[in-house]
Amino acid sequence: GRLACLWWRTRRLPPGPYGIPVLGYLPFFRGDTHLHYMELARRYGPVFSLRLGNQTVVVLSDYKMIREAFRREEFTGRPQSEFTDILGGYGVINIDGNLWKDQRRFLHEKLRKFGMCLTDSGRTNMENRIMREVHVFLRNLVDNRSPETDLNPVLATSISNVICSIIMSVRFKLDDPRFKLFMDLIAEGFKLFARMSYVNFIPIMRYMPGLQTTRTKIAQNRSEMGKFFQETVDSHRKSFDPSNIRDIVDSYLMEIEESTSQGRQMFGGRDPDRQIQQVIGDLFTAGMETVKTTLQWSVVYMLRNPEVAKAVQEELDQVVGRGRLPTLRDREFLPYTECVIREVLRITSVVPLGSTHAVTRDVQLGGYTIPQGVQVVPHIHAVHMDPTLWDQPLQFRP
Image 1 (cartoon, helix red, strand yellow):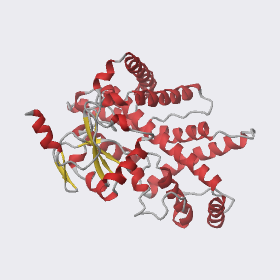
Image 2: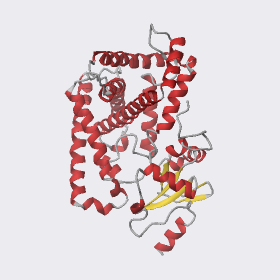
Image 3: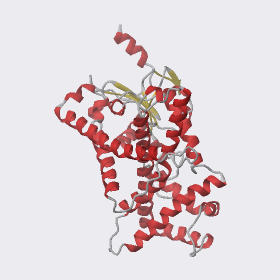
Image 4: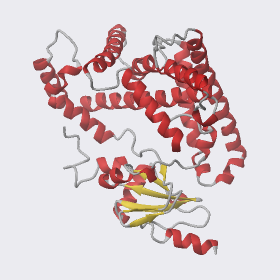
């Protein structure tokens, strides 16, 4: 009966490759996942499905389908996985349901207040934060007398300081040992979670000795990160002034104070401090790494395409001149520079696969039935390389 039910639920899924019992299609993956998905999309179409261990995954490679899906309430769920189990339902990126809606609404409102908006006052606030770090970044480059320059640590520090100024009013120097420890913990965390990826599809693997060790290291890593963030929360709590909300941490402390006085439950009964810790981690890692990598790729493409770099410089010289730095007000007068930035974003696909979602009930999409709980992955790289959308998508053509 259960087999018949499973067959009935999956028979109207999008087409896709066959796998083998228990493991599904996992043994047949070759190379980077997003590139392998490109091959499958060419074979089965822009919407295909595959079985990975005990999970069914639907991959969307068409931008219209992606837009349609993620506008719908049914696609806002998150899969239950080893990753979400370790996080314990905290944060903002890997949660769903009412908590996700409340946190998303709360953070959108507060981030707009601190400058992430298009109004003149908000834009000026954000621009001041950015330009302060741009000046420090340029000074660090000038002070570097080495014939070779590693942009990674300099960019990481400057970008982190912009983000941290909004989240927790913390600023790091380039050689700050706390910042180095912080970045090392984040890098180690990414590597550790990558080792656990197969456990998401074959849960029994978590009991393998090597992966048990990895899980222990993840717990230690998160404990150290949590300690770092908690020190910030405790420091804010000591100097908290409800008439002067400085950043996101203060905004949460204000919300906690108001909820307590009104007898409202916060975060679905979860530990408030741990929720703040995870939100800090989510916002920092999501923002810093993507911006830093995009800027590094921008440098690479300017070095490989000197004629493009020259055209950007000529436009900047004409509009901005050499006596000052560009501002956000210059943006509308720099169309070619804007095109170059957008082309870097397209061709590099810094995040080739979007966040994995799970449908909250049986749904119809593109003529197919996607059963409740099935994972849905937006294939961003495929959209960026779609020859029906872009002429010569493999070429850098601003």
